[in-house]
Length: 164
Image (cartoon, rainbow, N blue to C red):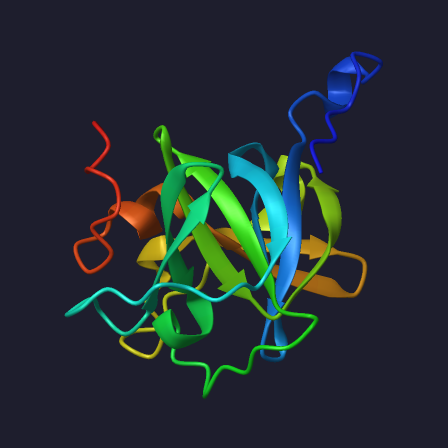
């Protein structure tokens, strides 16, 4: 699933960012495509005792033990179901490999900086600390997740805090 665009991009589009779009419940989210290592179907995970609920467990991915996070549990989006559409996005963040369970993966979307709006302050309703902003493309709106912030947050603790 590694699709990189060639060097034929015009200089005006060079600031564009590519996001992998995926769904959680009724909402569509986006993450930086450069952090995505691969996509996999949902496999059985090995539970870890005393792990937070959103950490489903670990899988052995070609000899690497990979923690699997269910984003539906993390974002309180109801009871997750696992079916043939459930996808695990394998991420590589700060040289740590981890998996993120989502309902489905849509496509790769290229957004220019002017298509990314800051996330509105929602008070305590929604933690916008992990949001990069909202991406708009025609009638679609993507909630853009800042993976570095999310995965290094205290409750995730999966990667060390990145130097500011």
